[in-house]
Length: 434
Image (tube, rainbow, N blue to C red; front, side, top):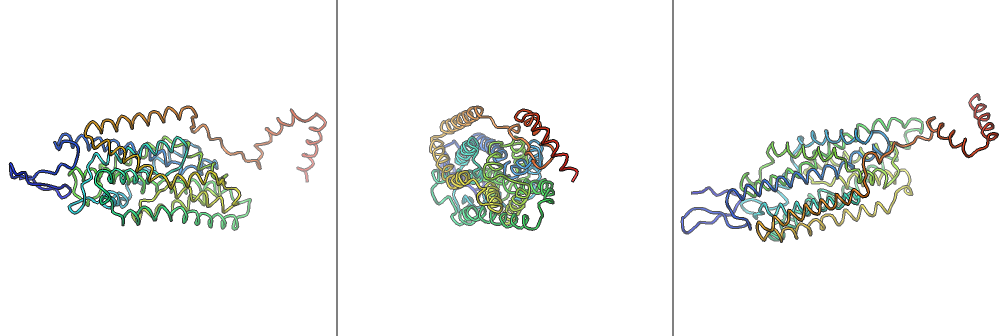
Protein backbone atom coordinates (compact mmCIF):
# COMPACT_ATOMS: atom_id res chain seq x y z
CA UNK A 1 0.00 0.00 0.00
CA UNK A 2 1.33 3.44 -0.90
CA UNK A 3 2.36 5.69 1.94
CA UNK A 4 0.16 8.80 2.30
CA UNK A 5 2.39 11.85 2.15
CA UNK A 6 1.07 14.57 4.50
CA UNK A 7 1.26 17.31 1.88
CA UNK A 8 -1.06 15.59 -0.62
CA UNK A 9 -4.71 14.62 -0.25
CA UNK A 10 -5.25 10.92 -0.81
CA UNK A 11 -8.21 8.66 -1.62
CA UNK A 12 -8.76 4.88 -1.60
CA UNK A 13 -9.10 3.39 -5.05
CA UNK A 14 -12.12 1.06 -4.79
CA UNK A 15 -10.75 -1.17 -7.55
CA UNK A 16 -7.43 -1.94 -5.90
CA UNK A 17 -7.90 -0.85 -2.30
CA UNK A 18 -4.68 1.18 -2.48
CA UNK A 19 -4.10 4.87 -1.73
CA UNK A 20 -4.03 7.24 -4.71
CA UNK A 21 -3.74 11.04 -4.81
CA UNK A 22 -6.76 13.15 -5.64
CA UNK A 23 -6.62 14.70 -9.10
CA UNK A 24 -5.87 18.21 -7.86
CA UNK A 25 -3.78 19.10 -10.89
CA UNK A 26 -4.79 19.42 -14.54
CA UNK A 27 -1.68 17.39 -15.32
CA UNK A 28 -1.55 13.60 -15.37
CA UNK A 29 -0.42 12.23 -12.02
CA UNK A 30 2.41 10.10 -13.44
CA UNK A 31 5.81 10.44 -11.84
CA UNK A 32 7.35 11.63 -15.11
CA UNK A 33 4.83 14.47 -15.48
CA UNK A 34 5.28 15.58 -11.87
CA UNK A 35 9.06 15.53 -12.09
CA UNK A 36 9.00 17.44 -15.37
CA UNK A 37 6.68 20.08 -13.92
CA UNK A 38 8.81 20.47 -10.80
CA UNK A 39 11.96 20.86 -12.94
CA UNK A 40 10.20 23.49 -15.06
CA UNK A 41 9.07 25.43 -11.99
CA UNK A 42 12.56 25.32 -10.46
CA UNK A 43 14.08 26.65 -13.69
CA UNK A 44 11.53 29.47 -13.82
CA UNK A 45 12.10 30.26 -10.13
CA UNK A 46 15.82 30.59 -10.76
CA UNK A 47 15.14 32.94 -13.66
CA UNK A 48 12.99 35.03 -11.32
CA UNK A 49 15.89 35.02 -8.86
CA UNK A 50 18.14 36.25 -11.66
CA UNK A 51 15.75 39.11 -12.50
CA UNK A 52 15.51 39.91 -8.78
CA UNK A 53 19.29 40.30 -8.75
CA UNK A 54 19.57 42.89 -11.52
CA UNK A 55 16.29 44.55 -10.51
CA UNK A 56 17.57 45.15 -6.96
CA UNK A 57 21.25 45.95 -7.57
CA UNK A 58 20.34 49.62 -7.17
CA UNK A 59 19.27 49.08 -3.56
CA UNK A 60 22.89 48.82 -2.46
CA UNK A 61 24.93 50.38 -5.23
CA UNK A 62 22.94 53.30 -6.68
CA UNK A 63 24.22 55.84 -4.15
CA UNK A 64 27.96 54.91 -4.17
CA UNK A 65 27.88 54.94 -7.98
CA UNK A 66 26.11 58.32 -7.98
CA UNK A 67 28.68 59.88 -5.63
CA UNK A 68 31.70 58.28 -7.32
CA UNK A 69 32.63 56.23 -4.25
CA UNK A 70 32.73 53.12 -6.43
CA UNK A 71 33.08 52.62 -10.17
CA UNK A 72 29.95 51.02 -11.67
CA UNK A 73 31.48 47.67 -12.61
CA UNK A 74 33.35 47.38 -9.32
CA UNK A 75 30.17 48.18 -7.42
CA UNK A 76 28.07 45.46 -9.05
CA UNK A 77 30.90 42.92 -8.64
CA UNK A 78 31.07 43.60 -4.89
CA UNK A 79 27.27 43.41 -4.66
CA UNK A 80 27.22 40.07 -6.51
CA UNK A 81 29.78 38.44 -4.21
CA UNK A 82 28.10 39.67 -1.03
CA UNK A 83 24.64 38.65 -2.25
CA UNK A 84 26.08 35.17 -2.78
CA UNK A 85 27.49 35.07 0.75
CA UNK A 86 24.38 36.56 2.34
CA UNK A 87 22.13 33.90 0.85
CA UNK A 88 23.75 31.26 3.08
CA UNK A 89 23.32 33.17 6.35
CA UNK A 90 19.61 32.71 7.11
CA UNK A 91 16.46 30.84 6.01
CA UNK A 92 13.80 32.54 8.17
CA UNK A 93 12.25 34.42 5.23
CA UNK A 94 12.23 31.28 3.05
CA UNK A 95 10.12 29.49 5.64
CA UNK A 96 7.64 32.40 5.70
CA UNK A 97 6.88 31.61 2.05
CA UNK A 98 7.18 27.81 2.05
CA UNK A 99 5.31 27.25 5.30
CA UNK A 100 3.32 30.38 6.03
CA UNK A 101 1.77 32.43 3.24
CA UNK A 102 0.32 29.42 1.38
CA UNK A 103 -1.51 26.96 3.58
CA UNK A 104 0.21 23.69 2.79
CA UNK A 105 0.25 20.45 4.71
CA UNK A 106 -2.24 17.92 6.07
CA UNK A 107 -4.73 20.53 7.30
CA UNK A 108 -4.20 22.91 4.42
CA UNK A 109 -4.73 23.04 0.69
CA UNK A 110 -2.80 21.54 -2.18
CA UNK A 111 -1.30 24.17 -4.47
CA UNK A 112 0.16 22.25 -7.37
CA UNK A 113 3.38 23.05 -9.22
CA UNK A 114 1.39 24.38 -12.19
CA UNK A 115 -0.08 27.14 -10.00
CA UNK A 116 3.35 28.09 -8.67
CA UNK A 117 4.50 28.17 -12.30
CA UNK A 118 1.70 30.61 -13.12
CA UNK A 119 2.60 32.74 -10.10
CA UNK A 120 6.19 33.00 -11.27
CA UNK A 121 5.07 34.01 -14.76
CA UNK A 122 3.15 36.95 -13.28
CA UNK A 123 6.08 38.00 -11.06
CA UNK A 124 8.69 37.82 -13.83
CA UNK A 125 6.62 39.71 -16.40
CA UNK A 126 5.92 42.51 -13.91
CA UNK A 127 9.61 42.66 -12.92
CA UNK A 128 10.59 43.06 -16.57
CA UNK A 129 7.98 45.77 -17.22
CA UNK A 130 9.12 47.87 -14.26
CA UNK A 131 12.77 47.34 -15.19
CA UNK A 132 12.07 48.65 -18.70
CA UNK A 133 10.71 51.90 -17.26
CA UNK A 134 13.43 52.17 -14.62
CA UNK A 135 10.85 51.90 -11.85
CA UNK A 136 12.25 50.55 -8.56
CA UNK A 137 9.25 48.37 -7.71
CA UNK A 138 9.39 45.49 -5.27
CA UNK A 139 10.45 42.11 -6.67
CA UNK A 140 9.28 40.61 -3.38
CA UNK A 141 5.76 41.96 -3.75
CA UNK A 142 5.69 40.87 -7.39
CA UNK A 143 6.46 37.33 -6.19
CA UNK A 144 3.89 37.43 -3.39
CA UNK A 145 1.26 38.88 -5.71
CA UNK A 146 1.95 36.20 -8.30
CA UNK A 147 1.63 33.37 -5.78
CA UNK A 148 -1.52 34.86 -4.27
CA UNK A 149 -3.23 35.43 -7.63
CA UNK A 150 -2.46 31.93 -8.90
CA UNK A 151 -3.47 30.26 -5.62
CA UNK A 152 -6.81 32.09 -5.49
CA UNK A 153 -7.68 31.04 -9.05
CA UNK A 154 -6.57 27.46 -8.55
CA UNK A 155 -7.80 26.77 -5.03
CA UNK A 156 -9.71 29.74 -3.63
CA UNK A 157 -9.20 32.44 -1.04
CA UNK A 158 -8.75 29.82 1.70
CA UNK A 159 -5.34 29.01 0.19
CA UNK A 160 -3.93 32.23 1.68
CA UNK A 161 -3.21 32.65 5.38
CA UNK A 162 -4.48 36.20 6.07
CA UNK A 163 -2.57 36.44 9.36
CA UNK A 164 0.77 35.79 7.68
CA UNK A 165 -0.17 38.07 4.78
CA UNK A 166 -0.89 41.00 7.09
CA UNK A 167 1.82 40.53 9.72
CA UNK A 168 4.73 39.42 7.53
CA UNK A 169 4.06 41.23 4.24
CA UNK A 170 1.48 44.04 4.29
CA UNK A 171 2.44 45.75 7.57
CA UNK A 172 6.21 45.64 6.87
CA UNK A 173 5.49 47.07 3.41
CA UNK A 174 3.67 50.03 4.95
CA UNK A 175 6.02 50.65 7.86
CA UNK A 176 9.48 49.80 6.49
CA UNK A 177 9.96 52.66 3.98
CA UNK A 178 8.58 55.19 6.48
CA UNK A 179 10.86 53.95 9.25
CA UNK A 180 13.89 53.72 6.95
CA UNK A 181 13.20 57.22 5.60
CA UNK A 182 12.85 58.60 9.13
CA UNK A 183 16.08 56.99 10.28
CA UNK A 184 18.03 58.24 7.25
CA UNK A 185 16.55 61.74 7.75
CA UNK A 186 17.81 61.83 11.36
CA UNK A 187 21.25 60.44 10.45
CA UNK A 188 21.62 63.00 7.67
CA UNK A 189 20.65 65.90 9.95
CA UNK A 190 23.11 64.77 12.61
CA UNK A 191 25.90 64.19 10.09
CA UNK A 192 25.57 67.67 8.60
CA UNK A 193 25.38 69.25 12.03
CA UNK A 194 28.27 67.36 13.64
CA UNK A 195 30.79 67.42 10.79
CA UNK A 196 32.33 70.63 9.40
CA UNK A 197 32.21 71.02 5.59
CA UNK A 198 35.96 70.49 5.17
CA UNK A 199 36.04 67.11 6.91
CA UNK A 200 33.31 65.20 5.07
CA UNK A 201 35.49 63.42 2.52
CA UNK A 202 35.59 60.37 4.78
CA UNK A 203 31.92 59.63 4.04
CA UNK A 204 32.81 58.62 0.49
CA UNK A 205 35.21 55.98 1.86
CA UNK A 206 32.58 54.95 4.39
CA UNK A 207 30.12 54.35 1.57
CA UNK A 208 32.23 51.43 0.36
CA UNK A 209 31.61 49.62 3.65
CA UNK A 210 27.97 50.64 4.14
CA UNK A 211 26.96 49.71 0.59
CA UNK A 212 28.71 46.37 1.03
CA UNK A 213 26.70 45.80 4.20
CA UNK A 214 23.48 46.53 2.29
CA UNK A 215 24.47 43.96 -0.37
CA UNK A 216 25.11 41.35 2.30
CA UNK A 217 21.79 42.15 3.96
CA UNK A 218 20.02 41.96 0.60
CA UNK A 219 21.35 38.44 0.11
CA UNK A 220 20.05 37.35 3.51
CA UNK A 221 16.54 38.54 2.59
CA UNK A 222 15.80 38.44 -1.13
CA UNK A 223 17.56 35.23 -2.17
CA UNK A 224 15.50 33.39 0.41
CA UNK A 225 12.24 34.20 -1.35
CA UNK A 226 13.16 32.02 -4.30
CA UNK A 227 14.34 29.34 -1.90
CA UNK A 228 10.89 29.45 -0.35
CA UNK A 229 9.17 29.10 -3.73
CA UNK A 230 11.27 26.06 -4.71
CA UNK A 231 10.71 24.50 -1.29
CA UNK A 232 6.96 25.12 -1.63
CA UNK A 233 7.05 23.37 -5.01
CA UNK A 234 8.90 20.35 -3.61
CA UNK A 235 6.39 20.11 -0.76
CA UNK A 236 3.44 20.44 -3.15
CA UNK A 237 4.82 17.64 -5.34
CA UNK A 238 5.45 15.37 -2.36
CA UNK A 239 9.25 15.43 -2.59
CA UNK A 240 9.74 17.15 0.77
CA UNK A 241 8.00 17.08 4.15
CA UNK A 242 5.53 19.89 4.87
CA UNK A 243 6.91 22.47 7.29
CA UNK A 244 10.56 21.73 6.47
CA UNK A 245 13.06 24.37 5.39
CA UNK A 246 15.06 24.64 2.16
CA UNK A 247 17.64 21.99 1.35
CA UNK A 248 21.28 22.99 0.96
CA UNK A 249 21.25 22.48 -2.81
CA UNK A 250 18.28 24.85 -3.06
CA UNK A 251 20.15 27.49 -1.05
CA UNK A 252 23.24 27.10 -3.25
CA UNK A 253 21.55 27.43 -6.65
CA UNK A 254 19.45 30.38 -5.49
CA UNK A 255 22.56 32.14 -4.18
CA UNK A 256 24.34 31.69 -7.51
CA UNK A 257 21.30 32.87 -9.53
CA UNK A 258 20.82 36.11 -7.60
CA UNK A 259 24.57 36.80 -7.66
CA UNK A 260 24.69 36.44 -11.45
CA UNK A 261 21.68 38.72 -11.83
CA UNK A 262 23.26 41.29 -9.54
CA UNK A 263 26.45 41.36 -11.60
CA UNK A 264 24.43 42.15 -14.72
CA UNK A 265 23.55 45.49 -13.08
CA UNK A 266 20.10 46.99 -13.30
CA UNK A 267 21.43 50.23 -14.74
CA UNK A 268 18.01 51.74 -15.45
CA UNK A 269 16.90 51.44 -11.84
CA UNK A 270 20.34 52.48 -10.55
CA UNK A 271 19.89 55.71 -12.52
CA UNK A 272 16.44 56.32 -10.99
CA UNK A 273 17.49 55.78 -7.36
CA UNK A 274 20.97 57.29 -7.66
CA UNK A 275 20.08 60.49 -9.53
CA UNK A 276 16.34 60.60 -10.12
CA UNK A 277 15.10 61.15 -6.55
CA UNK A 278 17.69 63.64 -5.32
CA UNK A 279 21.28 64.68 -6.02
CA UNK A 280 23.04 62.38 -3.56
CA UNK A 281 26.23 63.56 -1.84
CA UNK A 282 28.59 61.14 -0.03
CA UNK A 283 27.27 62.14 3.39
CA UNK A 284 23.72 61.39 2.22
CA UNK A 285 24.68 58.14 0.54
CA UNK A 286 26.36 56.96 3.73
CA UNK A 287 23.28 57.82 5.79
CA UNK A 288 20.90 56.08 3.36
CA UNK A 289 22.98 52.91 3.31
CA UNK A 290 23.24 52.70 7.11
CA UNK A 291 19.47 53.04 7.40
CA UNK A 292 18.80 50.51 4.63
CA UNK A 293 21.17 47.87 6.02
CA UNK A 294 19.78 48.18 9.56
CA UNK A 295 16.18 47.83 8.34
CA UNK A 296 16.87 44.79 6.15
CA UNK A 297 18.92 42.93 8.76
CA UNK A 298 16.26 43.55 11.43
CA UNK A 299 13.49 42.27 9.14
CA UNK A 300 15.52 39.19 8.19
CA UNK A 301 16.03 38.35 11.86
CA UNK A 302 12.26 38.62 12.46
CA UNK A 303 11.39 36.60 9.35
CA UNK A 304 9.69 39.52 7.59
CA UNK A 305 9.67 39.20 3.79
CA UNK A 306 10.61 42.83 3.40
CA UNK A 307 10.87 44.77 0.16
CA UNK A 308 14.47 45.95 0.06
CA UNK A 309 13.54 48.25 -2.83
CA UNK A 310 11.02 50.11 -0.70
CA UNK A 311 13.51 50.44 2.14
CA UNK A 312 16.26 51.72 -0.15
CA UNK A 313 14.02 54.23 -1.94
CA UNK A 314 12.56 55.41 1.37
CA UNK A 315 16.05 55.95 2.73
CA UNK A 316 17.09 58.04 -0.29
CA UNK A 317 13.98 60.20 0.04
CA UNK A 318 14.81 60.60 3.75
CA UNK A 319 18.33 61.84 3.08
CA UNK A 320 17.01 64.27 0.48
CA UNK A 321 14.64 65.71 3.07
CA UNK A 322 17.44 65.74 5.61
CA UNK A 323 19.47 68.14 3.47
CA UNK A 324 16.74 70.22 1.83
CA UNK A 325 13.14 69.25 1.20
CA UNK A 326 13.24 71.17 -2.08
CA UNK A 327 16.02 68.89 -3.37
CA UNK A 328 13.65 65.89 -3.63
CA UNK A 329 12.13 65.26 -7.05
CA UNK A 330 8.59 64.61 -5.86
CA UNK A 331 7.41 63.59 -9.31
CA UNK A 332 9.86 60.69 -9.35
CA UNK A 333 9.07 59.88 -5.72
CA UNK A 334 5.37 59.81 -6.60
CA UNK A 335 6.02 57.39 -9.49
CA UNK A 336 7.94 55.11 -7.14
CA UNK A 337 5.18 55.21 -4.51
CA UNK A 338 2.58 54.38 -7.16
CA UNK A 339 4.73 51.42 -8.21
CA UNK A 340 4.75 50.20 -4.62
CA UNK A 341 0.95 50.31 -4.46
CA UNK A 342 0.18 48.54 -7.72
CA UNK A 343 2.95 45.91 -7.82
CA UNK A 344 1.25 43.25 -5.70
CA UNK A 345 -2.21 43.49 -7.35
CA UNK A 346 -0.72 43.85 -10.86
CA UNK A 347 1.41 40.72 -10.48
CA UNK A 348 -1.57 38.91 -8.93
CA UNK A 349 -3.78 39.72 -11.94
CA UNK A 350 -1.11 38.56 -14.41
CA UNK A 351 -0.58 35.35 -12.45
CA UNK A 352 -4.34 34.76 -12.18
CA UNK A 353 -4.66 34.97 -15.97
CA UNK A 354 -1.73 32.56 -16.35
CA UNK A 355 -3.35 30.19 -13.84
CA UNK A 356 -6.63 30.21 -15.78
CA UNK A 357 -4.73 29.17 -18.91
CA UNK A 358 -2.66 26.59 -16.98
CA UNK A 359 -5.85 24.92 -15.75
CA UNK A 360 -6.47 23.76 -19.33
CA UNK A 361 -3.72 21.22 -18.85
CA UNK A 362 -0.34 20.65 -20.44
CA UNK A 363 -1.33 22.71 -23.48
CA UNK A 364 -2.19 25.63 -21.19
CA UNK A 365 1.19 25.46 -19.49
CA UNK A 366 2.94 25.46 -22.86
CA UNK A 367 0.88 28.50 -23.90
CA UNK A 368 1.84 30.27 -20.66
CA UNK A 369 5.51 29.52 -21.25
CA UNK A 370 5.45 30.72 -24.87
CA UNK A 371 3.56 33.91 -24.03
CA UNK A 372 5.90 34.61 -21.11
CA UNK A 373 9.01 34.13 -23.25
CA UNK A 374 7.50 36.31 -25.99
CA UNK A 375 6.78 39.16 -23.59
CA UNK A 376 10.26 39.00 -22.06
CA UNK A 377 11.94 39.02 -25.48
CA UNK A 378 9.76 41.93 -26.63
CA UNK A 379 10.66 43.94 -23.53
CA UNK A 380 14.36 43.24 -24.03
CA UNK A 381 14.20 44.30 -27.70
CA UNK A 382 12.33 47.46 -26.70
CA UNK A 383 14.99 48.27 -24.09
CA UNK A 384 17.71 48.30 -26.76
CA UNK A 385 16.19 51.44 -28.28
CA UNK A 386 17.26 53.44 -25.23
CA UNK A 387 20.20 51.49 -23.87
CA UNK A 388 21.45 52.24 -20.36
CA UNK A 389 24.73 50.65 -19.25
CA UNK A 390 27.59 51.25 -16.84
CA UNK A 391 29.02 53.68 -19.43
CA UNK A 392 26.00 55.92 -18.83
CA UNK A 393 27.37 56.92 -15.44
CA UNK A 394 30.04 59.60 -15.46
CA UNK A 395 32.04 60.31 -12.29
CA UNK A 396 30.81 63.40 -10.45
CA UNK A 397 32.80 66.58 -11.09
CA UNK A 398 34.30 68.12 -7.97
CA UNK A 399 34.15 71.81 -8.80
CA UNK A 400 36.15 72.75 -5.70
CA UNK A 401 39.25 70.91 -6.86
CA UNK A 402 41.95 72.03 -9.23
CA UNK A 403 40.75 69.51 -11.82
CA UNK A 404 38.39 72.09 -13.30
CA UNK A 405 41.15 74.53 -14.14
CA UNK A 406 42.10 73.07 -17.57
CA UNK A 407 38.43 73.12 -18.56
CA UNK A 408 38.02 76.72 -17.40
CA UNK A 409 41.19 77.69 -19.26
CA UNK A 410 39.81 76.23 -22.47
CA UNK A 411 36.54 78.11 -22.03
CA UNK A 412 38.36 81.39 -21.29
CA UNK A 413 40.52 81.07 -24.40
CA UNK A 414 37.42 80.82 -26.57
CA UNK A 415 35.06 83.39 -25.07
CA UNK A 416 37.41 86.02 -23.57
CA UNK A 417 39.68 88.48 -25.38
CA UNK A 418 43.41 88.36 -24.76
CA UNK A 419 43.48 91.47 -22.54
CA UNK A 420 40.78 90.05 -20.28
CA UNK A 421 42.61 86.74 -19.97
CA UNK A 422 45.83 88.57 -18.95
CA UNK A 423 43.94 90.51 -16.28
CA UNK A 424 42.36 87.34 -14.86
CA UNK A 425 45.74 85.59 -14.75
CA UNK A 426 47.35 88.58 -13.02
CA UNK A 427 44.63 88.74 -10.36
CA UNK A 428 44.86 84.97 -9.83
CA UNK A 429 48.62 85.16 -9.16
CA UNK A 430 48.10 88.04 -6.76
CA UNK A 431 45.47 86.06 -4.86
CA UNK A 432 47.80 83.07 -4.47
CA UNK A 433 50.55 85.22 -2.91
CA UNK A 434 48.28 86.58 -0.18
